[in-house]
Amino acid sequence: MKTLKDAKIGETLKVIKLSGEGAVKRRIMDMGITKGVELYIRKVAPLGDPVEITVRGYELSIRKADAEMITVE
Image 1 (cartoon, rainbow, N blue to C red):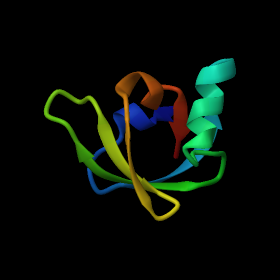
Image 2: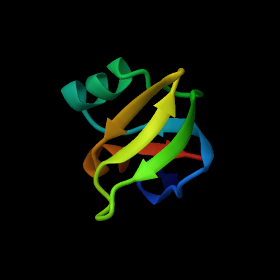
Image 3: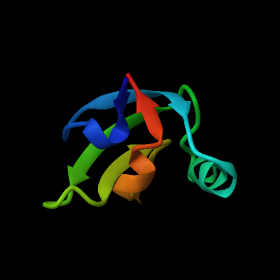
Image 4: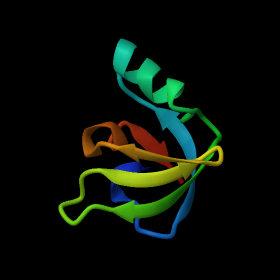
């Protein structure tokens, strides 16, 4: 399974599943990243952390540790 951490710049992906526990999962969902939503990968920092994405019409930067919890296709 591919995670958001493995995504390349310019890809449009669909969220399949969110892993993680409690507060961490809740924070990701509060940012608008929920099952079925489409994400566009805008930029990846030179060392891979953070990843800048467009979700639900706004830009969002997400840490690599959080990106690993998001399964995409």
